[in-house]
Length: 188
Image 1 (tube, rainbow, N blue to C red):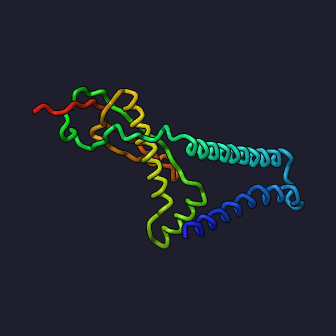
Image 2 (cartoon, helix red, strand yellow; image 1 turned 90 degrees about the horizontal axis):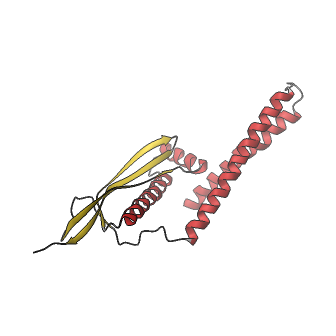
Image 3 (cartoon, rainbow, N blue to C red; image 1 turned 180 degrees about the vertical axis):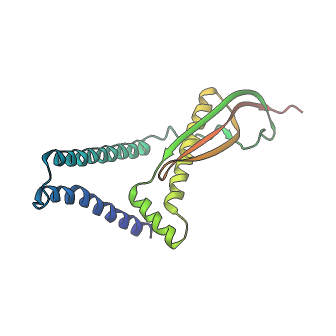
């Protein structure tokens, strides 16, 4: 079912793309009834060219990010830093507080998935596109927080908390933070 939804989203995005980048220029060039001044034609093509350039740049960046994520696993947490939402680690004592560590990211989903979710709002059910987006964002923010704690030489991050904020439209920021500490075994 997910593949059918993605296919529908793809066809919708292609339809919008063709309407904007083929339909509007064709109307501006081929239309004889309303005479469109040359400066307005230049403005329209500049606007469309700029949008196309931004879309191509985003596609290249997305492809590069996807390839770098597949090739490098060094950003993944290695499991040596303990994460807790409490203020102590059972069986261990905090020997030094290293300070606040944080990680954040801002994520958005592409227009096709956004429209697919909009239809689901009407029909009801889980908005899986947003669920996946927020899960990925949370993992990214957590990984960045752990990397900062590792740089400080932390054994654990205590009092871990997450915050989310809507940035613009359907883009959301995930902010992960906690206190980096070093640990020692409890003395009896």
